[in-house]
Amino acid sequence: MLDIVFAKPVTPKAGAIAILLAEEETLTGAALALDEASGGAVARALAVAGFKGQKGKTCLLLAPVDGLTRVLAVGLGKRAELTGITVEEAGGAIASTLSQETAVTVIADGLTPVEAAHLGLGAVLRAYRFDLYRTKEKAEDKPKLTSITIQAEEASKARAAYAPLKAVAEGIFLSRDLISEPPNVLFPAEMAERCKALTKLGVKVEIFGPKEMEKLGFGALMGVSYGSVREPRMVVMEWNGAGKGKQKKPLAFVGKGVTFDTGGISIKPAGGMEDMKWDMAGAGAVIGLMAALAGRKAKVDAVGLVGLVENMPSGTAQRPGDVVTSYSGQTIEVLNTDAEGRLVLADVLWYAQEKFDPAFMVDLATLTGAIIVALGQEHGGMFSNDEELSQKLLGAGIASGEKLWRMPMGDAYDKQIKSDIADMKNIGGRHGSAIIAAQFIQRFVNGKPWAHLDIAGMAWSSKDNGTVPKGATAYGVRLLDRLVRDHYEA
Ligand code: BES
Ligand code: MN
Ligand code: ZN
Image (tube, rainbow, N blue to C red; front, side):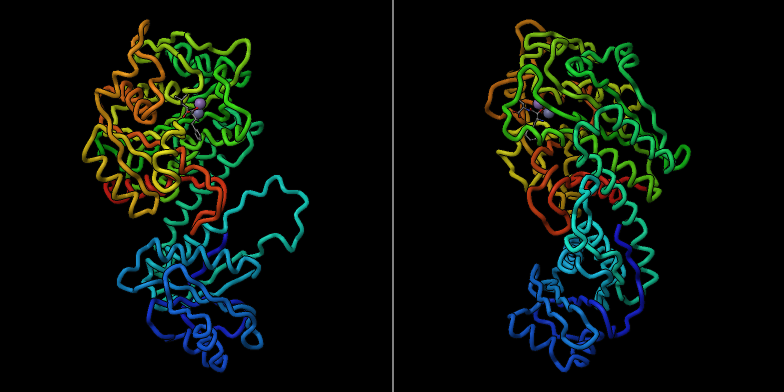
């Protein structure tokens, strides 16, 4: 992880420098001194480039004076409209544009300490890279940036504000690592094993194997696992940070962790099937969230549960037409073995509400292709039975930049999963199938306040974005960390 250092403003004389400029503002302070030291080269370059501090714009100068390698100006947009997300994206632009420098100094004397901390977070998040399996990359192709010094007023306050954000970044990196791993390396038992690392942070980690789950009666989850030689797992992670007796009911977060989804006997077409290695991104987000909460010692009681399975076709796989009995006692006719995520969530959600009587449950799942058709890669789809929880989640989405859009639910959709032989079937019609999936899941929350986040469009990015490089996004970690921070911490 990039090292972020906070220091008092002094005009840097050497190396690489980033300056920040709000729209229609002129160079001031250390940035002005830098311009003067360069004989006005910075201001001249900005004028030629038409750079006026517009949001999302940057202007790069190479070696403007002896000793300085690169000077990057980053636009912040209108000062009055400045948000945490804007400064994070500025940090991201600095980390990506100056990745060939080893160290960068950012002149951020115009930012508040909290804004300066968020700039650091943005840089760290954008500089993430999963390169475990690149053995032959040339040195010149590798990013070299290892540290960023942010010069801000009240550097010690900025440093203090950055500490919890760094813990969140650690959670995001854990999540991105898990989601990026190939499916031959990261199968259910291995993923459960990696959850054990959270014990170091003070999280209680309990792992359930097939014997325990069979005994409990997890017929829905176990049915999905039968096609694979890889054993399923459920991991329960408890973080008790509120203090004894302070919080009556814990918050519960539940993740779909299908480490590879072939579709099973209802097998998927070959094209793009490799994407189904990230069908465990909901679980990855829950694990990253628990690491973030524990890492920053959040004053909250929260429990994270993940159902981990591999969905494979084989002689032992479940068949279309099978009827399974879920942990709730409700029976399910499995008409399509590729609608497996809801089967996994059914048992884990029922267990979560029964065991923990939580204040609410939020589940995250790469559940349907249909949600990608509906919302693209801009919003996660939210389905909920609770007005208050929905509003809080929507707000956390805007504040964190991990946006949600609420989708409708209702009896008319629910009717579609009536079965002729069992209590329900696991698919309905083709139209509105993200909603039908949500109706299915709702039958396993036992009336508890609940929100289902279908993150199929958000878990993986095909291009670099502000603070998220191409690949695993860890969508959900920041969103839910923000939800907890804004509403549930003592
Ligand atoms: N994991 C998939 C959903 C998915 C698709 C996630 C594309 C990310 C990208 C899920 O298990 C699935 O196969 N869903 C089916 C449900 C259908 C059989 C009712 C789908 O969306 O097609
Ligand atoms: Mn599937
Ligand atoms: Zn799936």
